[in-house]
Length: 492
Image (cartoon, rainbow, N blue to C red; front, side):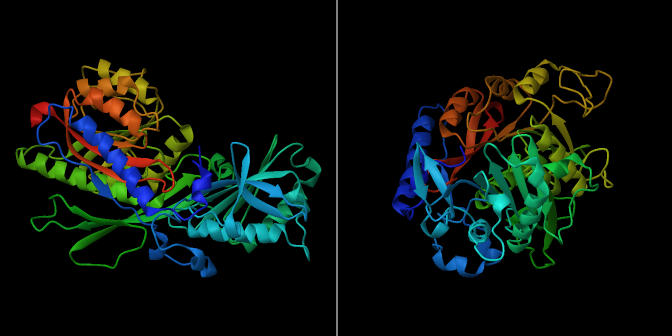
């Protein structure tokens, strides 16, 4: 669910409670690790992700009611029900097990600053009694969803309507009222949804990222984001591994010792994106640092004149490319194959690869790390890869079962497996593929710690744990994100 134990969200988060949650997670991991035969088992590191907004921009008076801790202002997607009081004033609320929780001062503490600002602006407009009453927007309105970019520069609003919904005869009036809200609150887009009807308007001066007006992705709404990789240049030579100094939402200053790499994203608003930008940045930096260490170890053990000293990576559950694109632009890998089931995210990832000039077959610089993106279920792909015993080539339009034996690319020989599954963890077939495949390293990003322990019991038969870290995913809930680096036992 989008919100867990919402009543906890509405009070100041106790730092002791957050520390207890992290300690419990680390204790669970330590208890499991102690059952392994592995020697020199690392203890979990605790990583801290702070809100990114203080580095970007402020939102006027909203900051006055915000705690300075990192337990608030982190969510970039929030949904609320709408209720009306006896005075016909609307308000955003949370409903849990039939109980309605009102938001103090109309603010949801976990929401980032951009969404907080948008919530206040929207409710103030809808409750206006003077020049405009927004009758069409208010009628049958049952809930609202706010989606912001990670850098909080963009915000999209979706209005959900219950029966009888938006009347066909009132669509133009709805659009006129929605346009006022869109411009006043500076939404890049306002969408209205009811049974059989979907309407939207865009901010008057907004330039759509979509190439053509009839592009189907426009119907979903697009969230645009930019982040920066700061790579420390090698002191040896240009072909050596660059160290990832940091990952930032803010454009860094130019430096003679660093290489600043700009990464652009366009994400469909209705599909999954990481809801906590601070955790996403922290996890990404950890992944890049881990891959840097793996790449450096690989180069020192590879013949200098080898045709390829860089590693090949298979990524499963890649989404819109939040990890994929930075990994490609980090110059650490020779090739990435990404697999995702959601067609919207598959198309978004391919588009983001095009935006960043790293899509295989289309990139202008074929010497850089290139990405191939496939639509497929991770478990089905795992079954297929286990059955491949010689080089095969796949078309990006084929399923994993439609394998050609005439190509030169080998989709079974990868050095690294990166997985970022949903809360229920990995399919058993994926674990078996990891064990029986050619992977020497496995990086597992988990948001379901119980499923993680279950999967590790299988994986640790053939892999040792090299490193692990824990991040508080959603303060005020029991959710954590766990990062694990495993290495095949025979290579120790």
